[in-house]
Image 1 (cartoon, rainbow, N blue to C red):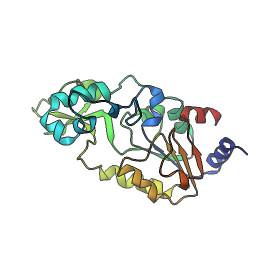
Image 2 (image 1 turned 135 degrees about the vertical axis):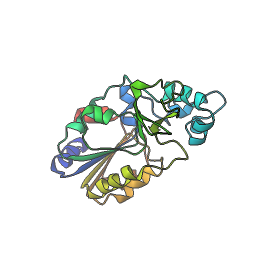
Image 3 (image 1 turned 180 degrees about the vertical axis):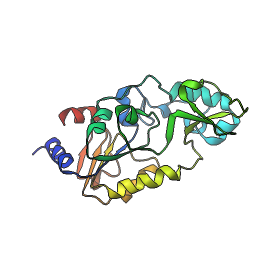
Image 4 (image 1 turned 30 degrees about the vertical axis):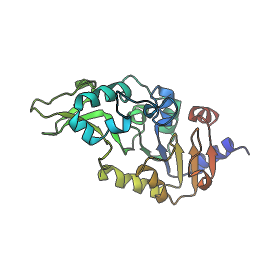
Length: 234
């Protein structure tokens, strides 16, 4: 049995699958990843590194430059779910998707239970009165202000900010309860998100990522290739 047939059988026999995704699953939808040669982190922006710009302190001190970068490099309102998003959304035994992505494509594909560890570009809120703003209600290329006068912030976890415990704890519970975990499109170097794999106590750990990861030796099956190609074979 080849490993694609093996994965098919594992998926068929699983009761609770958790799919853990990173930027790689959205690259086929036209959204750049962060760490590849052409990723968001591969170039300076003005005299600043991307990591500097998408930090909380930079957002507070230089919101104009923050939004100039954020709007051009991180928000893709016209992106559509690809074959991989749609495939995992249709699997009846997927109990949850835990994602590091901020693009909302899992929900757009039809996934019901999605834990967005790093928030979403589709949601925004006033830092003063906490009024909610949809991404269509603001200009993502420059600072926007609420009717109360407060600045509007993307509901995205920036550097220097903690993850939301109301998302983290149920995500960890889902991972802990799963019998199969399929990790897709992540190099597993972003912490604390990558550390949540340690809570998996199930039977089958599957990794699908173009490059190797530090978890490859712990996985039952490893596919170092594009997730779209794997999904086509499934």
